[in-house]
Image (tube, rainbow, N blue to C red; front, side, top):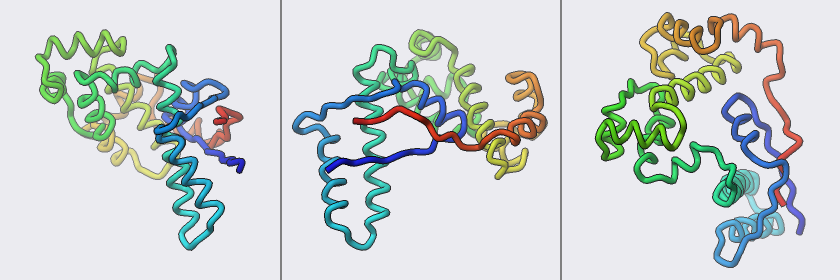
Length: 206
């Protein structure tokens, strides 16, 4: 059985992940590899349609995509720094906290406490692994989330500001201008003329 699927990526976060992957992923699933199990489940589901099949296939394809990306990043010398850092037990909890709750007013001491390190040791370890300070990384992450919100147009400025950790639209606008050289409203208006979704030509999973 030949399985074929496609994903649409939109926004800076999805596009950034896509750009970190090679054009073609060739994966070999050994016995016991979860990839092999997911592919077997996909094949079985396609060959034996039952009610709820579309939901099951959607979830299995999501799992397959994540496992394929993990497999590539594990063996690639060019895997993104954030992926390698996420596997570091000294940094993984802090990175997960920032990624999952960008609206929280994180500080270096709080992130260091989550990691079980002193402030100095955490800051040093973080910079060595990711090439930037924790607060710079957090700002970059918040701005990526903000750009995605601005691009979709589903949230107002106040809601976007709160979701990415700023106390007011004015504080958010000032931070956005420092980061991008223009206010968020102007950025959103300019981006609204572009396609909101990108259908990638790759990578392809074989």
